[in-house]
Length: 224
Image (cartoon, rainbow, N blue to C red; front, top):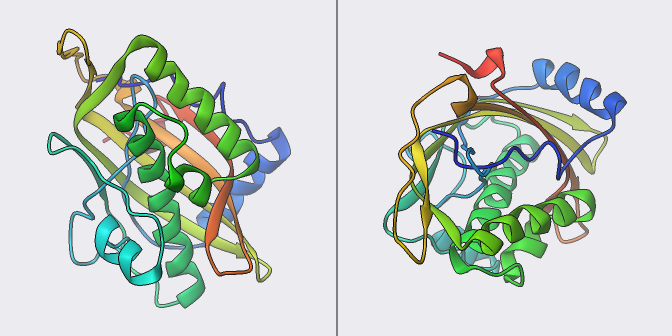
């Protein structure tokens, strides 16, 4: 299905940065999974498996004094990646997943004023995410089902910078209108798969915030 209008228009890295992300992504490391579609979604609550690095929202958030992220019972994100063994890369992967979850939570809540959205996203990523979420709110839409994020690659840039690339499979997630409660049952096509190139920077408190995002819906790299 196609859950969202691609993020490409809302969040865009410069051509140079996007190329850098692709190149760095190949050298860096581990697999994970996230999802997005018809409305290019980013979200998530469950980690999916023991080898997934991202902790469940509530447990990790509460333990570290971070904002709690809640998902409705009929929607979840599954992130498929193994820990790299490098503390910095593992922290980047975990916060990258929480960035996705924070955007989806804003969609579910129907507000861009959530604590997590600005906690895990900043600069172009934050402004783009707000535009993206407002698109859902304007149509009174949300999404249901499961989005899978996978094929993660992470690379570090100095002590405070990182790049993460990953794919999303939105074939099992669907747009739902809040007023009519009608679910848009869209077929699975190549557009159900999205490639993401993201840039993150570490704050003084250790949180890795996503600062920029570029997406390519229908990417051959992400299709089965």
